[in-house]
Image 1: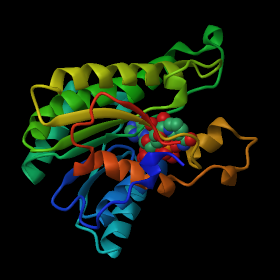
Image 2 (image 1 turned 60 degrees about the vertical axis):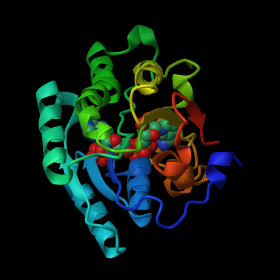
Image 3 (image 1 turned 45 degrees about the vertical axis):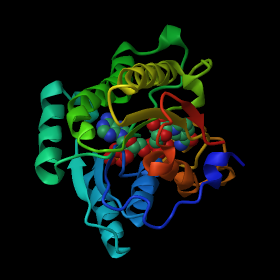
Image 4 (image 1 turned 120 degrees about the horizontal axis):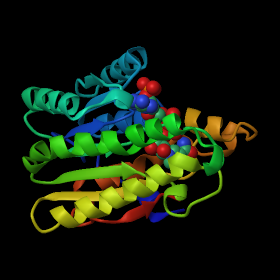
Length: 249
Ligand code: NAP
């Protein structure tokens, strides 16, 4: 068991914290957002599918969590202007941001580089790299208003060691690691914002099932099992930890 999964969070760990989770409509992001709400956070739920986002919203309210907010945004067409509109809305609604979990991503094709479709390559890089960049840059002023802010990029083992047929997805995760390191270095001595990446490892979600259609889904841990690691990174106990590429398992 990895030490991150042994983390035991106090019940009020995230009280009064505003945390934006991208890709909160499904899989790992959904479990993280629901978990953050259970530990007191007010969560901003980003995704594309408003029906799924509404279901997460209803579930959090039904469980007694603080009222979340919903932020539907398609990342394939996200521009600097649309990202700014989203940040303006966060500012008007909440006035600051304490946590930003970059989790939304698309898998693209499992195919050799030689035959990787250029338009799909662009989509994967846009959703997995450009969109987190555009959101991060425009949300930084709101993160600076928190006295203890945390930015987490969701990575992958193929973003740390390239692997055949993982194409644009692997390359996008390498880019996320580079963005994390560069941003962490910029902010370390000039802000209260820590920046890290987390590789969740194989997890039973729609993305994993699509990447490994021959695998029994239940052999992989649930998205909910990752919660201690996300709580650690979003709460005060990870203060001072920055620029780290962390692994859950
Ligand atoms: P998932 O179940 O497929 O969920 C993906 C989420 O990203 C959904 O909320 C989806 O929104 C959102 N999303 C996808 N394309 C989008 C787009 N074009 N615009 C905006 N939002 C978009 O995936 P997951 O397995 O939970 O993955 C979460 C993170 O963990 C990803 O960064 C992934 O790379 C990483 N990861 C996963 C595994 C694993 O085994 N599952 C392993 C290593 C790393 P909608 O539902 O609204 O479309």
